[in-house]
Image (cartoon, rainbow, N blue to C red):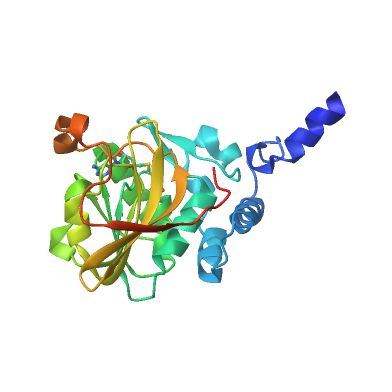
Length: 258
Ligand code: SAH
């Protein structure tokens, strides 16, 4: 029975604590996260390089550091979570970011995803609705050499009109419909990655691409994100459970991410 248990644990490396002996080293975190992203189908070497370089252990609270190399989301305070690293990598890959691209993130949280984006382009804008998290992320990003990332406290549902349009938009909290301001702030040929669905699921990760002014959406995988908090969306929650707007779903890509 013990052998069976051990075999079961070996089959779920992402759920194991990092060697169970205190906090893992930088190299260990890097190697394990890259291996997890590769195992989940991420192939873009620039994205994998960013995943290897950004120190995830610096973006989680002290009592979570021993879990930094596990491929799962972790609590970061205020009821929020840093996203599962292989999902961060997949979402980043889908954005196809070029070195000069202007990228908007909704849901700064710990700042981890913003740092990954900052490894790929120098133009990163990120909005966080909880002031303490925004301040913490801003300080952390600066300390770790990502001071060029612009972090703002506010409701990301409205986007950041002063800096629009964006080549890429990534939403790391789930609205129950596609926010129209974000669709409007996407450049022609721009890409947006966004989870859509009710709190607690089912939510679907969509890739939206603007082609000749129209948004084409591809359903990628089922996901579970914390909700996007938005006053107007809350008021109309009863009638706004499914994606709205002019995006058309054209396909589905399945992948083994949790
Ligand atoms: N990208 C983050 C993960 C964040 S979890 C990271 O790498 O750590 C999702 C975040 O979205 C939470 O911090 C939550 O407070 C934030 N959020 C929820 N609704 C929001 C909104 N309307 N505008 C901006 N941020 C929002």
